Image 1 (cartoon, rainbow, N blue to C red):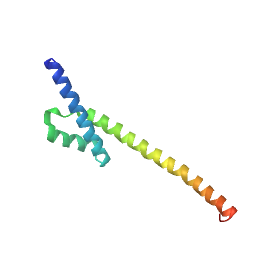
Image 2: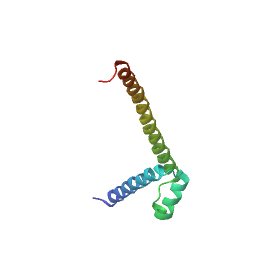
Image 3: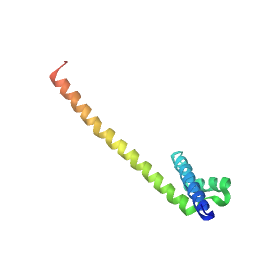
Image 4: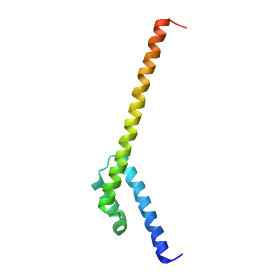
Length: 95
């Protein structure tokens, strides 16, 4: 394995680790500027560019909103069915 291969693996590992941190901090409600600042304080020169932190923040935040919307839609769809079944049971009387 060449020196450049080792550096590429290290850079990829750092990117993945920082993406995981970004995902966690987004779930905590932190802004991309705050996340970048925290990464920069700890990692200094190895920190992702601010643009990349912002990009990942948007991607994670959007994915989180999509998951929340999907859960809300599923919950909303289940409620009318349960209500409908309850109404049918009311009409037919107790079993």
